[in-house]
Image 1 (cartoon, rainbow, N blue to C red):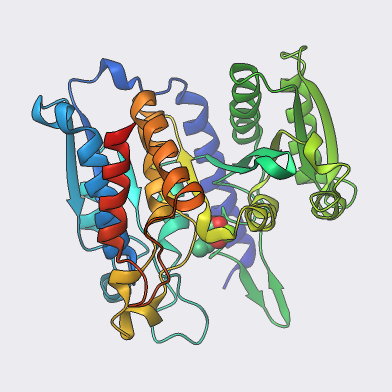
Image 2: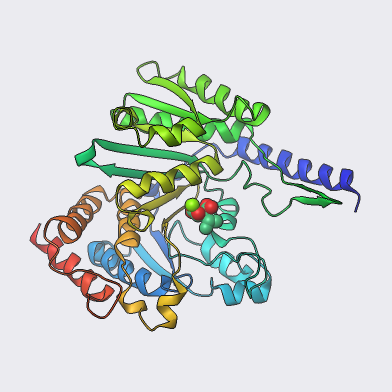
Length: 380
Ligand code: IPM
Ligand code: MG
């Protein structure tokens, strides 16, 4: 292998991506569309079971719009690990074609093969979808009112160690991966974070990097975020290194001060798992992946294949993917419906809890839980 040539190819690919980013300026306007197409991707393991329940709830809330042909739901099959391994592709071509016909997507968990798994070591479907649809902002809210926690993470979603995550090089005894941070890639995530802060009355944006050590890439990320921050003089900007940031999230005196956090992909991956633990674990969090043309909403838990093997998928908890559905509603402009769904989720999972999911036959099924949510919405 000619490593220099390989490296040159990687750099060319990234330069082309930078040019493309510079061209894509405008966000899609959902209210200008004749019809919004919502794709529903079941995924693997418990994915199809829980996603079907979230789909029912969303159709229920958008019943009028569906009947008026203003909204269409499309179930997209085939994004399974079996098909992906057989095609040796992170997303099979025919599935990708269907996905690209939609405007927004609700996605169940997809299995990411690990070294040693029976599957071909294809790239994670999540990561591939984020890159393929250029879903650059991974927005992950974490709220625990009783602890004073109200954080919104803006994790950059297409760059950093993920950009070339499956294109590292083995050269003799050396393993090399590449970390890529670009100016337009950083500018757009920074702008998304500051705009969110401005529009939601937040007073502070916190930049998280390791720019003291990883000087070139994280240094650029930090500089550009600070630069963008200057356009938002009403918002205070601070910056922290990722190591101390992980500590400060558990510092009771400090943590309530953080509001909006903006960070490169991998630090964002790690820190958002830690953060979600405060509100009951990653299984309780929803996640929005937002780009200028597409957006995808997902639960951030895994596909729990063991539950399916044991015939328990119908008892799997759909609340996280339903929460992702609420984020989807809000994103495409149905804020009233989103608010109702958030309220119902709070009643059904925190305050009233008439039906409890345990993951086993002693608890409610996902379908019973979705019924409970819909009944509750009707009382609001
Ligand atoms: C997440 C997940 C993914 C990621 C995995 C499944 C590839 O951990 O959505 O946070 O690393 O982004
Ligand atoms: Mg993660």
